[in-house]
Image (cartoon, rainbow, N blue to C red; front, side):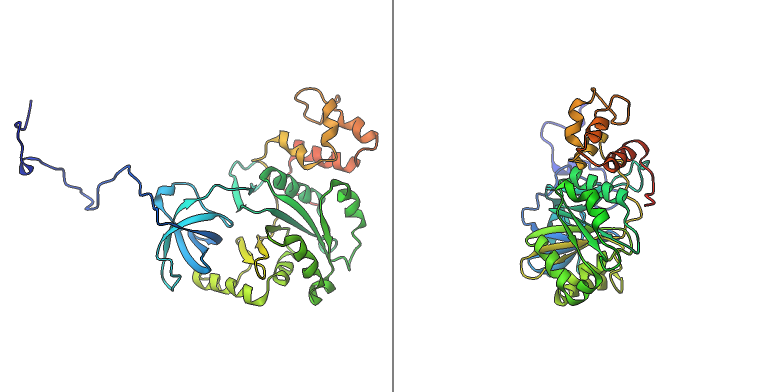
Length: 336
């Protein structure tokens, strides 16, 4: 039945009132053509500290991004109040496609994948040579995550005044992975920072390592005092008195020398998100030996060609042992 005549008037049209009193929903999203690009420096309880045109701007994620979250290192499009003045809040409306991603899970049985850092060029894996003792399998896991995420690894060994690096270098020296050896004395007089900075120049480098290896001490030595003031600004906004590395934090090196990203100390590094067929890529000394493996080889079976590859002296047996531990057991904690 037709309710209205051929010629209707606006008064004849009935509209259903909106009970919530807000504007009706629409599928048309704003284009935000005026969005300005910035970099995420740290994330704390839904608030993101960003660097926009040299200013520190606090922002929150816009609803239209849905479940997509921004992480430290992301380049984001921001709208709203970009003055950076106190008690102002902008909105992140766009996240640029990432060039690399450092991901981890809580353990190997946890399906929840967490993105730690985005767009980093390099992953500095910091390990002490003593106090605490090195944990080679944790280093291997970080290498797997680096290769899987598109980051170049850098091995940084600290506290060489307590133990020599020879044993660890024997394990990783043939992998063509750049490395640095530092001592506590070198950290105090600045020599270590100068040598490490040469490897970081013009790049975005994420630092990882378990607690007590001197990771944050090294980061503080790399970042000048005037640049570390940024940390105080960040924590003043988020409510923390000081940075205790409970969340990732990006800090600029002097001049245009690049960025360092300090991450929380690791207790474990789950690899649930990594396809097992890609784990071998973190072991370039073993990968050529897989050419003789049977199809769909698990690399832990009687016909695996890696056993002969190692027996012929092409790789250290400890490396094959570490690979097989990652592929078969994937322990939740790495005790050594």
